[in-house]
Length: 332
Ligand SMILES: *[C@@H]1O[C@H](CO)[C@@H](O)[C@H](O)[C@H]1NC(C)=O
Image 1: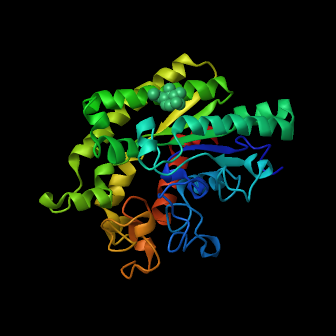
Image 2 (image 1 turned 30 degrees about the vertical axis):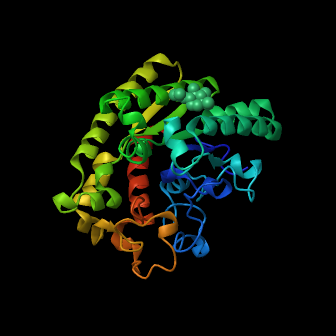
């Protein structure tokens, strides 16, 4: 089997739209992207359910580890355990650490991703036998990328959580869920884990669009929350490394690199950092970003963002390349 003898035989992914290769295609939610112009720069110009014009960061990470160029969605009926043995994603666009977040758009809750993972483990044991499966599960790299939706789609949009928690306590609540998730993964055999912090989420085009009062600048309040969250997540990760014997967990922090792209777009060949390629670039995503929208740009490589919430393939590549050479280098 390809990749099985390398240091990392498979990349196993949990999280939200940043790393969902099409699980949402199989569930009943309005948050989908399996139609044009999504995927127009993917292999064969195919829309897959990835929220981008092409591949997403986890695809590039898998490729950089010499495994395979794309990671399939667990719920996609075109694939089975033979494919998933070298990498699989349980991620669902629109989800968050918090159960309330996944309820907003009826997507897969984070805890359910873990249930799917357990099902995957049984399939893998049946396919490879116990010993080989256990070895694969402990040598695989687990990537978690989630959290932005808890703030943007949930906390700052609906009163449920914001009336219960001041924002710093909500950060702690989410971090508690993150560390329990890691402990569970560890107890199930995972040993190599990378957990992604929050991006400068106040700079997503959709958020900027709301910031009319300040000339569509980044919303600093949201960026500050992301920075604060990342500091807490880093210290939680340090604690988990001490607590759990034999684990190696790292935090990959996308904040500085993405902000650098946004502040100095021309250094990376981008021409637009504030609006997205799809539609008017201000608010379109999912069904609003469709082939009938006459404003969609012709060259997505000139844009940091593909739709109002998600990066272009080019940004995904830059971010993945950065994390592979920095945080993930310990696993290669
Ligand atoms: C989320 O929901 C699941 C399933 O009902 C439950 O087991 C879990 O405890 C909930 N998580 C939190 C943090 O409330």
